Image 1 (cartoon, one colour):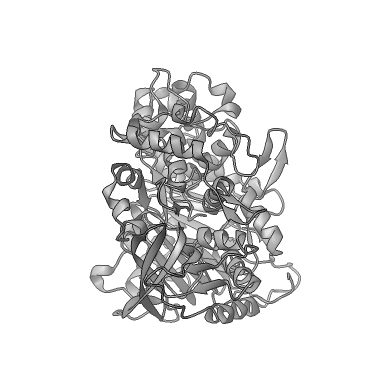
Image 2 (cartoon, one colour):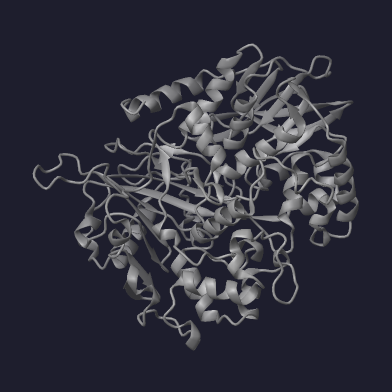
Length: 620
């Protein structure tokens, strides 16, 4: 697999996707329903279908566009064969065994191994990686600093005396130790159960509230936000407060896939359909618009769409199918667009859907003939700025120059990656930058959103300022591609984050089957404990199958004790979700022994601390 050219993999998957089933029998009267309809061809929907590939039941996977993957989205830049431009999820934490248990992204790692996909380093981690970061730039409030300057007197923030000389990770740790009764026992820290020193649940509070409450200055909070590349202020404190005393995000090593992260969901979908072409089908360009109850079944109405030049739009055609069970592998924004009475008429679901907020992100890959940043001593990692470009991730080359024979191909790419609120700076919608009406800048790739000459010129200006180059000395990129993950966009925002005041552990479990009398499930990273990672989507699917599917007997089941607890929570939800307690699940659901799906407190802290620090979700 590792010797297969990337262009061949791309051709293979594109060809395979075009072969997916285009039509299916109409089921308007529900006299002959299919067994399972999986809605959404993103990583969650593809994984759900793939996990059910051995089933003898009739299972259809529906995707609104012509592309499997959703927010897992790989594009190839011409001339760069060693890695893909990941404008969606781009990396994962490989599974490892430690004294504290299994760590990392377990389900993603296992799926990749089962599919025999080839893993590669996300960036160049050879040699002393930490030392290789020393020339990376932190350009904050007009002051140029290097990586080692982050805890020095060069920091341009007027912080309290006891905050001076501390790096961002140390400042976060300081607040963690000041706010939590037993910070030294962070290995046993469960953010849902934890209270601050005043006895208030962390999940009920915003991070900025905790920060100021326990002695942090506003300048220090702004410094942490600016230097980390993400605004923590509005985050649910249960996720944002935990901070490790060792290590920082910039020194972590991630993995990605040779051929692109898109090979993960596309290979899943291919194997699912190939396992039983008669019973297992994938239907592209079907957008779910309505769900209607028909006895024990659900009548699904679809708007047929068409995709041309990466833009998906509605046609005048519609289709219906009846299903015994529905798996909605969709994020909040897509769920809100479905006409389904229980979804919009129930107090809990209304509040549950609003328990998360979407985080917008902008990604632009720029391909250069040469990695010009190497002349500045920068080879890997990222640089950070308070300018709207925010994060610059250096992808570099597959192999560096030998120093003896000049590499013939020095083409390299850089990722420009701001998240909310800076992401909206790059939205040229009022200038007609959308593909349908605005042409590309020369040699840029066609996509849902164009790199216009305006966007490219502004990006180049900011890159020159960050790297202290004259604008005319910065080479023009020979290619590039971008995507803006935003509300109202094709796939919505980049990822979702739990709002303060909501107990995510309870809500995430209820979403798996929100109504006891409806065989409809909601899965995906949106309402998971790992929202910024693909692992969150896979984890929620495993939760669903663990509780409601007997693989040995190939049948769906109901756990009556779960239903009773769910009804109890629904009744309590009338008083507000923020008032719900984990005690609702006191008879064993929360503490059940299930090594396949349960995340330990250590895993939860690891995944969510990384999420808060990196804000690279998309499910990463």
